[in-house]
Image (cartoon, rainbow, N blue to C red; front, side, top):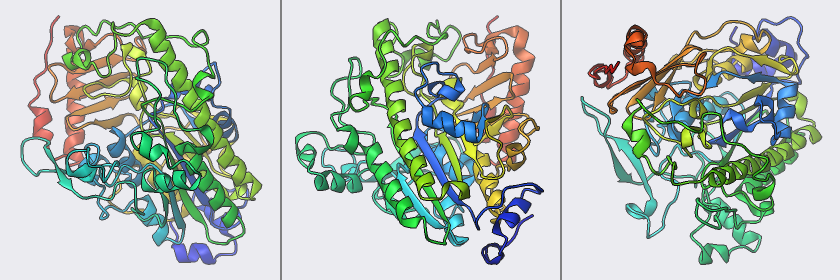
Amino acid sequence: MTISRRDFLKTALGGAVYASTLNLKQCKPLKGPPNVLFIMTDQQPVSTLGCYGNLLYPTPNLDQLAETGIRFTDFYIGAFPCSPSRASMFTGCYPQRHGVFTNNIPLSDNNPSLGYLMRDSGWDTVYFGKSHLKGHMYRDMPWRKPFNGAWYNQRILNDEEFIIEKNKGGLGEDHPQLGFDTWAGGWKDYHAYLRQVGLGKLLEERPIPGNHNDLPSASNSKHRYSLLPEEHHMASFFTQKAEEFLRQRHRRGRPFCMVLSYYGPHLPVAPPKPWNKKYSLEQCSLPDNHYDTLDGKPSSQRTNTYCYKFPEWKKNQYLDYIRRYYGYCAYLDCQIGRVLDALKENGLEDNTIVIFTSDHGDMIGSHSYLYKMENCCYQELCNVPFIMRVPGITSPGSVTHSLTSSVDILPTLLGLLGVERPQIIQGKSFSHLLHQPGADFRDRVFIHWGPQSVVSYDGKWKFGLHANAEVDELYDRHLDPGELKNLALDKRYVEIAREKREEIIAWLHETEHPYTPLFQRKKTKVLS
């Protein structure tokens, strides 16, 4: 059932109408239209959360959120890396429709996205933190090329392949955008904050902090931490903005939709003191799939020395990266706890839908890699945490193992809120999973992985079709959860590989991908 926003606001039984959009008969009535708090981190895999199995329990606040809501175990990004993933979350579409194929391509305002849809339907819209949807983030710096850093990527229209060029302009993180009226970004806004709290000298002495640059104390091969104090780190700055907003809004009648988007634990993985040493080397361990020969995998995986650190790095260097990463996640969890506390303290908890997720993961030592990369389809990068609490709907501590995609977030929210769904949306609503966690949903997910790769996953078989690599990838995740053995080269699995390739090609046609022929021309290679 879909109702108009005007009728939704007028009804005296807002909670009952809200419940009826889900066809539920027994829901706790809400006090009018619900608020939305959408919390996102950058580059955080499921392995960093206690509720997903991390035995160090670095995320007690997110674990508590999972205990009061529903946790999704098989939630996958619709696109990779940062900009495409975020665009897919906010539009419910894949890159072939919203146009953001790679980082720094601006998301066009012609796309009906979360901010515009909520604002036009009567919600106050708020955004604190990373966007990465309006061009390059580090701007007006004479040593950055080109255009002093003030540039954006643009796709050049052609019939053959994905080509981009840099153009001067874009908004970066500095201005309200995409339908969000209240805004604070991680560049100029954060610089102003540092000057306000007496840390303006840092802007003169060191490369300008902001966005992901949190002034790391050393190179990544050594132990490092942020030179910014924890109380004035970017994560704390955005937390303060969220707390202030919630204090100001708790007595007002208009609902709000807030996105709180942290820049961490994305590289450089330099958490502020004392979080850098919250865990010792002895407490951490290498992933089970750390040692990987990479035999039979795309050669670019081995030659990517920025991400592939074996044998350059020794065991303790990997362990130090892991402990810093966990420490950063613990610091961010502390900030998220402050915001969730503010929600409760201001009487907003029972009338606010809360979402937590990340735009993609990090390898954190798996297959001897750090960071993120293309020409792969590894679980550590595409399976991200997703936790949702919907007052009166979700059962505390519930878990769903149904395959879901980030393109499904927006249509689910719109359905919950009674907001009309634009026809252009490609995702599907998983609202029934919120009260029926064991129900069926998707039989497979697709991931647009960078400009020239597409991944399909059906819960057992994962297949990566790489248009610009010499081999594709096929993994049986039931028998090989660590994705160590690429079966795409094995003649015993040639039919499965062909079937998965055809599934992807059919999906590319169905979604009107402009470069479907590029993927169709890729030749299958079989060695044994």
